[in-house]
Image 1 (cartoon, one colour):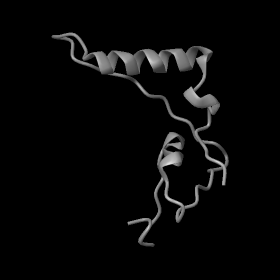
Image 2 (cartoon, helix red, strand yellow):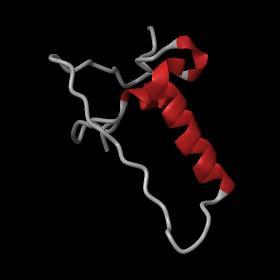
Image 3 (cartoon, one colour):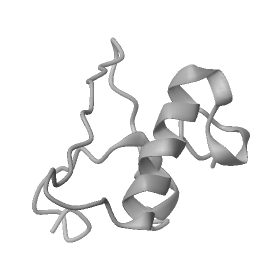
Length: 77
């Protein structure tokens, strides 16, 4: 709908690389941040992919950085 000119979208910065060339990312100022809390089932083990995502997030938070070298997720034009 955004691409059709019927509104705006506010995707996470990590999704900027998936935008088509007809859409332009515009950073919000001041920068907005939010916390995420991974949750999972208590009655059974988490799926391996969920564990991998949790571990990747923990590594990023501890200073490991984002894959690909760009912590912001923004793409250049």
